[in-house]
Image 1 (cartoon, rainbow, N blue to C red):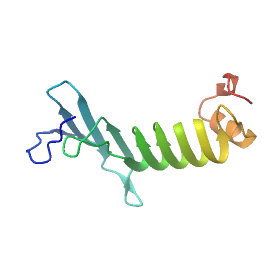
Image 2: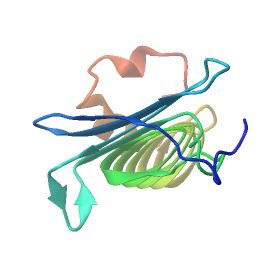
Image 3: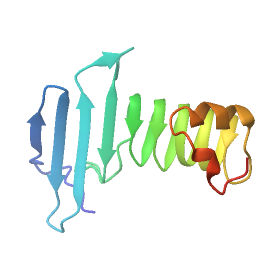
Image 4: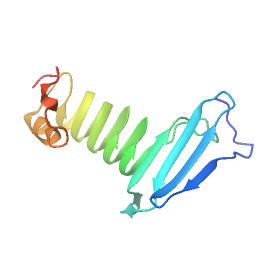
Length: 136
């Protein structure tokens, strides 16, 4: 992806009642989007969502919020390929309660490990999820 650091990036900015969207479509059709809620808690947006690579840097932005969703995410609830949080869900995740392919933390539910505390806690959000093929 070409960095546009020295160029003026023309984002499409859309302000809603809940927050602000910042979007950009590359000439190749690749897409970048970021959403930050107006509401904050402890200085973090209630929701931060990222998708694609930032046109200014050519890199992915780490989603940081109470609820963080993106390829890279960190927050109280973090959902992403690589996530870090109190509740972390992703392919590679670290946290207190972790649901991941490869997870590290206090209570982990992964392909190789199923701590009963993690299964019980995470089943509150998606009842019946313990029926999946992962160990339990």
